[in-house]
Image (cartoon, rainbow, N blue to C red; front, side):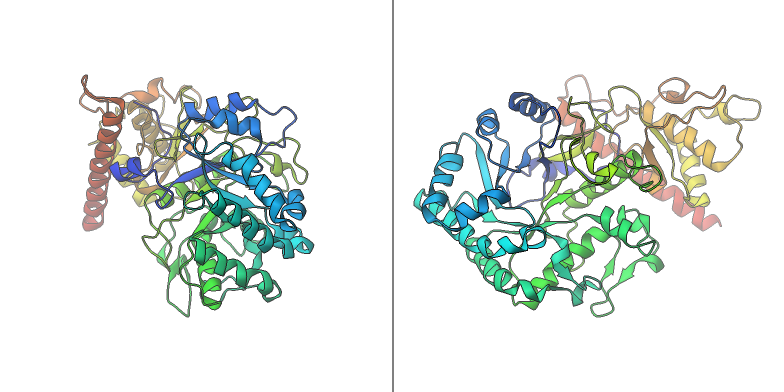
Length: 499
């Protein structure tokens, strides 16, 4: 069974069955600003080995498209910004582009969309008048090739084009962009294409000067009194991501457009940055953001404005890009380095679901800093009781007794359970008071990880039966996690009753 390093809440058979573009899925962007770009065949080998089913390219490189042939991977190709002038000024140029980059590869390459430019309205405003002609000319070419029913056309926007974005109900697009956005939204309506939006809670958090709490940016659970409430709608917002997506929905509604879905074409969190200027660009936060994002997307949680409506989302990005200019963190958004080594043990599997696979035993489950002590104690009691962790090393005189705190004892028990269960999905959650880290919590004679940190009593197992397939074993793991959560909730309820 795969070893998974964070909780994907209720992966369900439904998540495993999601393949279509109309459902919930997680994809990944592939940039090439690297000093040594992997060969296309290396990239597709990595994609296939990780079962990555949805990708976005920033161009339409023929070698990359050839390598993607017959893989079944769903691909968004792009018209780079520097090609907008030619395509936006010539129907014939657009037709040639489609013939060369789409018709020549489809259907052996599963091209699902064309992204026309990237954040043109905010980064190249002088090129804004070219967006609609380019999109119309490309659409004409798709229609002529009878490909318009398979491939949608849109253009990715920075969320900065949305003004007054909180409360979301008051959001509106920059009115100076109306000459482009109004016909653009009508085009998306008529073709059934999504509004492509890049959403970066990391930057919102960094630029807020402390106004936005880190937990709010990372999807961490918030007490009700800490949730942001839209006073106009009374909708509660527990994370930045939902607030930005709903701001886009409200901004479209302001222009009388209510039936265009939002696709998040870029989002993520850097795993490294300047230690003094960007302390929150680190692997733990990147893991936390992406794991919570994926659980949110794959559960089809939707947003407060549109609950239960899928928001297809693409993680930025597959590889670190070491030649990107800007701050130190700009180079470290990847899930892998350019050699294909995991940046923090993340990969995609199933139907585009992002999972973490630790085959090196180098991740640990620890008590979350700042977690409620009563919840920690209840979770510790569960782990040492129904969870069947051997907690004898936590007794006085034993190697892991000191420091004698709930936080430290819970960390030992959580990690023992996590490793004893093969680091499977959901085994480091404990109702939100546990997190995954790559920092070894071992100290002195108290050794964590898969050593004395995997001591479980007999009878605890999530392994598939001998006649099970890996897939069915994975489903069984989800069932075990549900039982675990139910048991923990029961323990917590009992603890409340007894207080």
